[in-house]
Amino acid sequence: MDYTLETLEVYKLSEELSDQVWKIVIKWDYFHRDTIGKQLTRAADSVGANIAEGYGRYFFRESKQFYFYARASLLETKTWITKCMRRNIAEQKQWPDLLRKTELIHQKLNAYIKFVSHSATHNPK
Image (cartoon, rainbow, N blue to C red; front, side):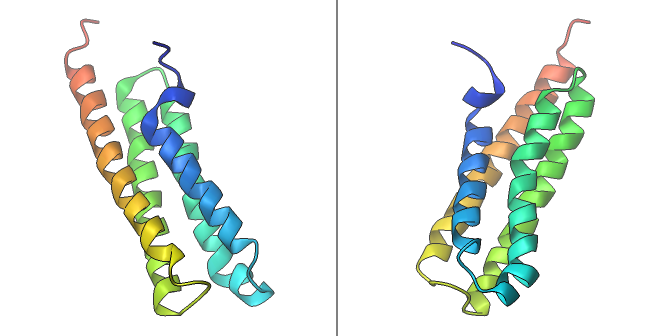
């Protein structure tokens, strides 16, 4: 099996989430796109970008720091989604699915951080 960034499940899920967010936000009117839309899109895009940057680092400790950034961006994404729900922005039926996806990514990201941490402590170098 190839172990590449593109095969890492948490990365693939984060990219799916950011693409879903993009498809939703791009249809909004100017005010919603300019206020919440930009913030939501940037936060969602940042999750995958930070996973990618961490994956590209040589040292586990340095990698982990970017995975922590990814987790923070994920929680920011979740915050913007809940604001959209409370403010009745766009179709209400799409938000619960996105929230479930953020929860799944959160679980998988935590597991990946734990895996990387464990690998770092057992590295023979």
